[in-house]
Length: 189
Image 1 (tube, rainbow, N blue to C red):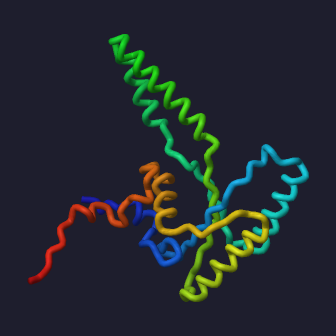
Image 2 (cartoon, one colour; image 1 turned 45 degrees about the vertical axis):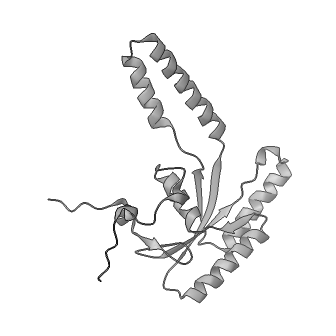
Image 3 (cartoon, rainbow, N blue to C red; image 1 turned 135 degrees about the vertical axis):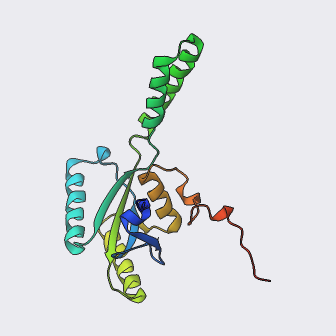
């Protein structure tokens, strides 16, 4: 029988750490960045934003950029409804399915512009105090370059991972260990 690996093992994720995520190769800290609506900015202001981003990346070259949809994807639901529409013979049920499809389309259009932007920084072989100092320095430099930033906490990271892995919008409510709530703790009396 083959040894099956979990997604967590395949990605090298070990556990949550004091500052973010601990992987088998490094520790990751994440920063949430408030997006700027460039559609309302002048060409000059867009150039300034681009220049600030270039300067930021030149000051902290190890900074990684992450962009995710900040909402769930309904593609699986839409495929299911399309398949049901092909096989459904009852006109009333077909009409309900068509309404469901239109509803999902409307929601997806509303949420399609909802993006979540993050920066990530990796730490290898550093002590807690060095990590803390570098996180503070990184947040300060990001902020000084005109970006509204905050370090992501455990719940923020859980939500990000849940969206990335298409699990749930309520990732911050997920347990640290799957199934832990179903285990009974037995004490040695």
